[in-house]
Length: 353
Image 1 (spheres, rainbow, N blue to C red):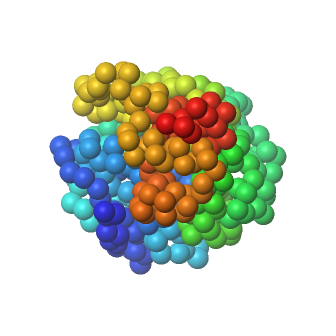
Image 2: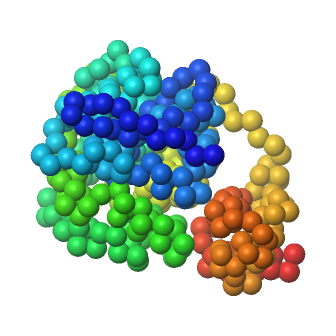
């Protein structure tokens, strides 16, 4: 069951939010780009990611102003505006102090919030975060200004294109997954207009939290993927060096978004950081490979290998299309593949099981 969408008052604006789960801690997830609370739950990867986080505490997610289900904005945003979104949502759910989990630009905002409101931050989790998006003389790992301009122009021009141009640079593991790209294009169009995307990117361009990093005084976990090319991993390594006592976890893979690819490696590091305990696992053989597949996952995989679409599989098995997508996502994770093409190449023998 999807969580209800509620609204927090932030000045004249309404900020949409959801809460999921309960537990000994609050975890505020800061979106790094654009988001849409309702559509996020239609992607099995993101649903799984949120669900695992919600087992560790009360997960609080929101659409920042101008995006998703939150009110649109007609004026230039300031950092105080965006920090106000976080405070308003925390106030609305009665959270005095929380762990902030920021991805990419959301990590930058998490650092800024921790510097401005240290009494409200229990700890920080920063994935593929940036101290400053554009390169500086003493921070050469950002984008060059002309590269930034090119990226923003291309992004706005192709916004919502069903083929999602450039996805292979951001999240290579799903670049050939047509189902995912169809969902992502719809998610992008619903999350923000092209003009708002340009505004958000220019806002991120001006953020620079380098001076705030040495003053962070809460436990901090920095996670990154070693082979990522969208954001230079050196950005995260720099942040981990400068924040006193920060812990860094370097995961395999090249996807920018932590809920894609080897998401469990990132989530395991988060669980260890927050609880001090490693995730409890069944025997390794029961967790990965064909033997890990449930009976229903085997049925779905067999039909997928026979070329059936999601709708056709749902009709054949008399289950919902979203259930089929969830089974596929879970099976892909156990098999270590990211698309039907890779599934066919590596596990064609499962078509007869």
